[in-house]
Length: 209
Image 1 (cartoon, rainbow, N blue to C red):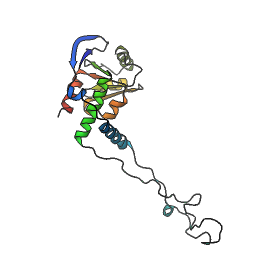
Image 2 (tube, rainbow, N blue to C red):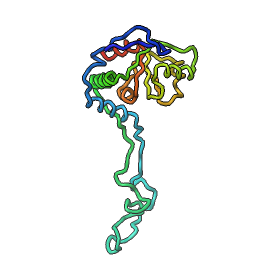
Image 3 (cartoon, rainbow, N blue to C red):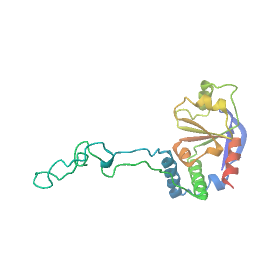
Image 4 (spheres, rainbow, N blue to C red):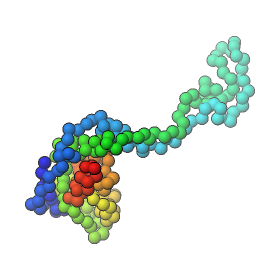
């Protein structure tokens, strides 16, 4: 699949790049996409939710009433879960939600996500660029020139570019990532991928190992 390379003014440079079929042209595997997105979201969870059981409350342990004949549910001390203010039964405890996926599974998931974007014609290739200083207005103009403004955009750079990152940081629905940090969730979550020429080479190098 060939895509024309644009400059930041939105003009066709006359060059074309061929997307690697082994990365952008495979049959997407929905199950590995599910697993990789599930892992990404699980890794974001803090796992700090905690409620007190009856043994952790500071109330008295005196038995409140007789075992039978009281006309209500049997209960022991004031920390009983059947009473308001008592302990909670089977409440949440701090835990780690992270789990492991094999490298080949994660690689296949990223290839599947990128292939979906290629099928949807949601990939824009732009020549490498930078800004002399952080200018949000300049980045907005670039998005307008590329006709991706108003859409949820993920821009992929070959390496960290502080000026470009700072220019886009305050914009909603816009995210900047390096090729090495690219993950399945971010690709699927974006409406359009804006990829620089050198980023394509970096992605090839990473996913063709």
